[in-house]
Image (tube, rainbow, N blue to C red; front, side, top):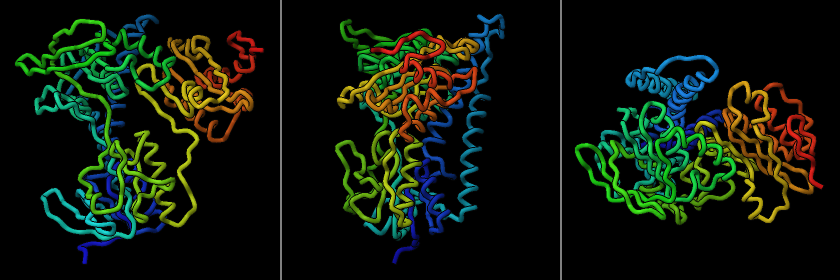
Length: 473
């Protein structure tokens, strides 16, 4: 006999795990949520999305103060109290996670502060913080263990000078010189924070461009801005041979077409991606299978090879995004509740919270080309936006990928301030199979940045008010 039993065991308390637990409880299920933290939240709330966005807000404020000089307003050099900033960031995290803890209690969910691994397809071995072990039997289980930073063996050191995202978000100090290995969204976001706080930031990316895989036309706007924000951006560059010294970390930068050069940095932030947290789950005691990248293999209902076990979020495959995990949570719970549903979104939004922001949903121009879809690309430059002008931020673009025959919106990409908020309209348009005429006829408030969606659609027809771009014949 197991020490405990439950109808649904949810392993992992992040945006996927707690969303699943909450919905299952709302549907009347007996739920046990297993996670080592005091309250739900996972990496997103404790060590990722939320603390990074809090700090990025501060970074943006600092930049705006500098930009205001061009408008005739001078604030002077900002004085940064790192301790107070850290406390505020932690208060934001604490407020949200404690709120989730209250929701656990209100929904009468059993929260076991522990790690869990499968003993078999019906039983979990639960290990608490003190090392005590017990067992939990379940009818159904949802695995939502998330992901963890990818490590580089040469930099896998206990030295305090080597940071991953968690250490960078701890805000223990502001280094004079910071090397960021990786030009993806994590490296660029955290690099932007430290640059705003006064660090000289160098970004080294192995690929020929920043944000590999993101629409190059959108990235071009961001790279131009970051070239003035960062001390240096080095593409096609490998970082090797770290040597830990009293005055910092000495590394060798090997860039394509250049001789290797040795540099010393106070700290090195390794931000080369994330990998699924699928190890140490005891999956070998079940029929659950992993793919070559360590993701748990699932079907359209988020079900694993074991009929009663589901997997959602980062551990279950790309894209590794919190909102994708939360959506999958609903699908898995509804399937367990006997509803006929499947995971089939037409668009999943993605946002890079740099300055300017980049956001996209649906197919990119490159994806439409690779799939052989007959399409047209329509653009509206934010330089022609009245609202962008009032913000002093004309360096933006809204881009629509439109199916040629039907005018259906296949994808949308944006770059500019607030792009992450604006992309929601694009998701709705794609999900509802809206076409360019639908967008152009929907009245948008003036003056707003949302008008750029409408005018990009009007540009497709050659009738955009604020740019002259006749329709191609």
